[in-house]
Image (cartoon, rainbow, N blue to C red; front, side):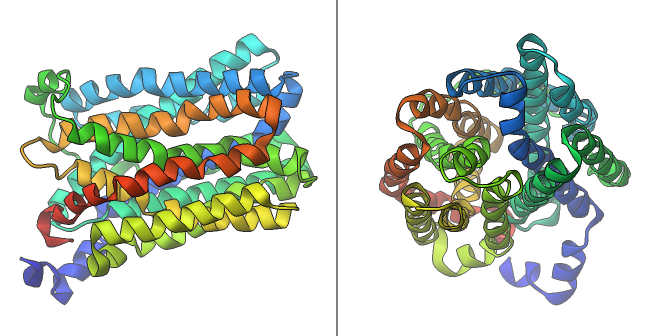
Length: 397
């Protein structure tokens, strides 16, 4: 099968497929919207007069918004297909940056953050489902490269956001970011793969698996994504408050993380082809541990940004490997395994950082970043489960 998939004509046409371009742009848009939030956080907290504890609660609301609407997304994808759901959720997501920027008090801030997190989560589930559909139609693996475009979007959103906020203010930044994301969505609209609905699987998705494997993979995804959420939500504040970085420089923490993550994800499928899922996961986890420790012990912002960059290298392929393994578990439909692993994983990125705010209120962010590698040691202990990622359909791995 590999010989047929990897012939030059098939590989070339597969790489430039309209549906692959579309789903890659969807990941880019979603990452851009998340990246645009990262440099806004310090100003958002200052405008609403939030302490670290209160900002942690606000970030918890963001996670609750995502985790509330993500299961609903799964049911709607089963009913209507991922194309319809990703289109509706993306349209609803577009004005949320402006809502976050214009929120005059805590009450409206909570509503804006909930909607932002909710529509972000729905779009995330739908675009991952569309990527799986595109992957099956192409008979080759594209998940790592899709996540690379998400990281590239995060890089653009975070780096551009920090500079725009510093020079023109938060409202100008939110307006321009919204226009750019909306234009990209309009360009993508007619290219999205129209996958078939699966109403027969709707009831099955409500049943939780009774075997431990999907939950162990979910734990692996969870502990891989907690550090990612920590850098996204707290990296800028850490650089500004504890390491004395400027507004513009503070945005480069998540930008550096996203840059290295995107670069490594574009080559992630090739690395896994050569070394296999288990060895690849172990190597990248060691990079993540060293990077997070460097950021925690950093004496200045520049060293911390370097640490975040190393951490981005590490985490780049940990999450795609966990998702690929979830979609290839034996004796289980891909949608059921993916729903468990993605929900557990994204809860790590969306909810766990709120706890970091509570802890940082008392001991500071540097100690938190020093402690996060303990979670990555658990991923190392579970790394043998990454062998399931090597069974992806179509001979791509």
